[in-house]
Image (cartoon, rainbow, N blue to C red; front, side, top):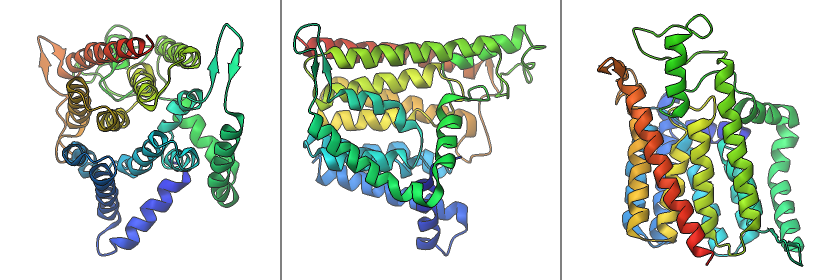
Length: 345
């Protein structure tokens, strides 16, 4: 289930590309939105090469029929306006971003904390109340048409099913995939047996797996508190915290799919546009590689042939890659966190 704007955009795509069947028309709309992203990065961020990198890195997602590309223009434009201190426009575009898919809501609290600072000394609470109210009004006005048309219940159901109460195990190369593999190996009666020695997504995840949901929420709360307490805040610092938070969502949350990391990849592309350093180039390439490897392993190039049916020393290749992803992403995010601490000096 997706929020209402995704349906509207897909319908618009079906009208623009009416000569194609619906599935191909949606891919056409994805490509159109990717073109918007590339042009914005080229002409607004003034980073032509990164606009090209961004588009190329998303083509497999478009080809496989994911609708993540519908989110990207709103996200990229939102952070552009945040950098330019045009906060009302930032609020409008980020709200639209969340109306396409639920995942951007995960970083919303961090973005709110950008405008609020807590201190152990007076003044204890620092916040531009007028600016926050203006942004809140812009967000509410942006949401109002959707609530009037669809009502509040379908939207709340999207939030509950997408973020809060997952009813199935992950299907991505993350830490939970490793846990899932060992549970299916040693406790098949309580979960489900391995399929030809390979782990598979299943409904009703084992109770042990829910523990790692708490790991994510603990880190989520810790990052929110950290963001509230740091004194030196810039869009770049906030963006790095958003990348860290979303990466932990991918690594430790249930119901994560193979395509969900792509949002973090786009955030690293935005980071590269705002802070063009060699380390940020490597970070983008790491996220781009892992993101595409996730989708490739489960769907291949055609969307039919998958490649997580191989084993090395009786260990499934998906478990090996999930282990590598976990180690590499934790290392990259440690580097990001250290860079944030250095900026506080």
